[in-house]
Image (cartoon, rainbow, N blue to C red; front, top):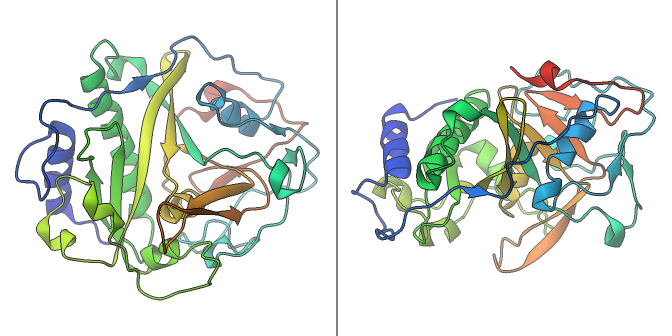
Length: 315
């Protein structure tokens, strides 16, 4: 793993503080603001699994419905030697393989009745570190936490060169992450119905990112995914933050193969729509096979016999 440290410092500065020197021009009259959907407390149910409690954090953002705890016969804690292949030990995710259902009870196995919500992340950020009275400042504070956790995840992934976080030309409250390498190639073609492979050819992101160095702008072998952070409630002394992932195949792939240092919970539905490679305005289904909740190389099961406590997952 090769972090571009010099680039990264400039990236964080330009992205969070909106300094000049960009390859694109941003809306200088408006700065992005953090979306705060709700600040009411969210109750953790000790009689439900960690996985189900995490999924329910997405309810206030219209995500996570259609899943419940069920019987689990096998300890599915992820153990593997390859940090790039989070689920390869038993599912073949790293090669884009189809996954068998392993624990989550879904409403129906037919595609038209699947859960139909986009992948998302769940994070818990100390209320002392986020000033929600100033939404622009809060956006920078939450984005800084997000970037540090994405950067840490990429640090554990071989075959990936990470280039940092960038904002949007529209000043929308969306952060974008750029990376390249063999990991990028796998991510870009993940779920491709034409089963293409090879070096990434990606120009779509260049139209709307700001602060990107010219050296990167001149390349087409760079992957990206977008994330929209939102506060949806609070629990104990923490804000509950949902990271709404973009529809890029790279976003889905990153959550599935985020390495052992991924510092927030990744929630992946049993099927997800991703942008078509040929036309980003179109989308197509990628079937995952079950709902996954993962953090730091560990899968959390929807186990009806599990009891849980919020304090056990805070680190």
